[in-house]
Image 1 (cartoon, helix red, strand yellow):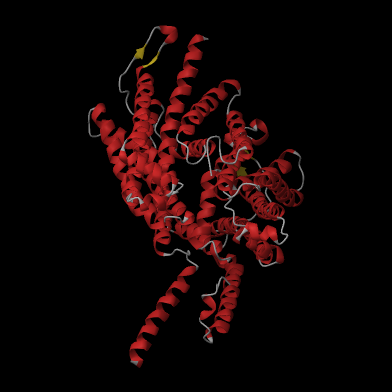
Image 2 (cartoon, rainbow over the protein chains, first blue to last red; image 1 turned 180 degrees about the vertical axis):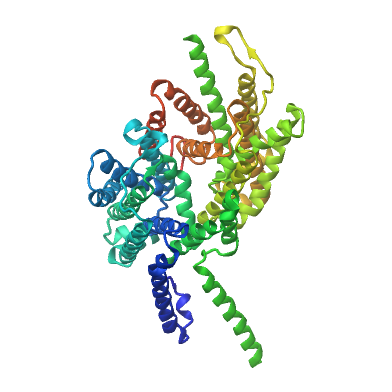
Amino acid sequence: MNDGPTGSRSALPATNGSKRVKVLLLAGILALLLILPVFSGPSYLLHVLILTFIYIVAAVSFRTITISGQFSISHAGFMGVGAYASGMASKWLGWPTWITVPLAGIVAMFIGSVVAYPFSRLRAMYYAMGSLFCGVALIDIIASGRSLTGGYAGLSGIPPLFISRISYYYFFLVIGLASVVALYRFEFSRIGVTLKAIAQSHVVASSVGINESRYRVLVVGVGCFFVGLIGACYGHYNRVLSPISFSLGTTLWIIMYALVGGINSFAGPIIGTVILVLIPNFASQLKGYLPFVSGVILLIIAYLMPQGLVGLPQAIRTRRSRVRNRALSTGTQ
Amino acid sequence: MEQELIQTVTNILILAAIYILMGLGFAFILNLLNVFNLAHGAVFMTAGYVCYLFITQAGINHWIAFPLTVVLIGLLGIFLERFCFRPFLGDFNRTTMVCVAITVILSTAMNLWLGSQVIAIPAFIPGVVGVMPFATQWDRLLVFLTSAVILILVMLFVNLTKWGMQMQAISQNVEGAALQGIHFGRIAAVACAVGCALAAIAGVFAGAIYNLSPFMGDLTLVKVLILVVLAGVGSFGGIFIMGLIMGAVYAGLPMLIPGAASEAVATVIVITILLIRPRGFFGHE
């Protein structure tokens, strides 16, 4: 799906077949995820998978913002806004969770859009820095909420959505899948194409009548809605919230998930999250050494795979075809 | 009351000195290589720990350990430039990845090794200087004076020496500088070494005055980013003025507004300024 002009070059009969393979692979993974709890029971594995689903939505919605060409470094902040909005509404006001969770998404979307509006005149590095400070400010504001938000001590006693971990698992599977499909549809809709045009050249885009700032506010709103939604679900799953879990470090990790997978393709953040959340958690005997694993993965990807993991098959294919071409040319001579 | 005032003023000056040292180091790397060195906080933290280890574990004298740390971290800067920044010049994403990886690896290593203890670099000169209402610790005075001297030296280096002027040329126009026969790689290495050495000085000071923690770099990094962006990319002079203002804001505001709220207020002020003047106060295109 990320095949650029160079990707479609391999016009071998493989293209049709590889699409079918992709669909089959996706269906297989999905079926596996659906029947997994039957075998595993409410184990640690399910917890890790739930976390993976949460961060997949966060990373994919982060990437959705980046298709407008701007690098937003405040994503975990909006996740926190969603989580706290839903947690506080259900805890202090006693609202039912099936209202507060979508509401949290809308609150995050609203705050995101309100902040994005003045920010839409900043570009590139200045936008990145502005959004970074914005994420820091959101967390500072949450932390200064004293008894309302619990401050740095955290907000505890958030009502749960379900009793069993298996129900949570299916809930997150459905929410995650729905969000990812929605974001996929968004990216390949007319709006997504417009955003890509803005990313390529905001001058040209404006000259053909695209309202740059409106689209940029829109995409930030969409990204924040999904991350706020998943943040709210996370809050009801974890039942304790701390501002520190939404700090700059988390934002950077969400960005790392997207970069490791490959930020230029839709599948990138999903693959990156699976690699960086799922795999280190299985090496649980490493305990404190876990961050080393993530760090080394980052270094390997940065040095060896410029396009992220998604670019790996492409790189291998190019190299192989180059070798084959060389063999062919020497063979004919 | 007087005591409190003196305390606040020294706190402001010390914080400003640490921010300015860090910010200058960051700006060196940013201006020369166009790299947002997110590992700067980790370098700062590592320097504090290295100095601590030299003094307590290796038993080296304070006055030797400090310059030794600075030189070592400067060498680390050359290493970073050669192996972490130069391969990815102009590639924001991969530079960010490498910087985050370095930060993670360094802070995890320090956390596993020494993270559980509350430690600080032992005082360079123990005791208090001055008569009681106007008294402060020797170390604070020392930090202030040393930073002042170092900052003057750095300014002289940038404005008067050959390397410093070549640096300015490169930050103004890379191609033009190269056409005049300036060796980009060498100057970039010098800038990274100086930048990291400045962060190391700040790290040792922070370790001597506050406590060491494996995550102290992360918080300082955010402040340094704020400082550099507010001062305006490409401006050295702005960093001095903004550093003083930021020191005043972050050390002074907690006196007026209690607790976490002061951080929130300070950051909101920063965002407002950034929106009004997107290029910072002293920056240019």
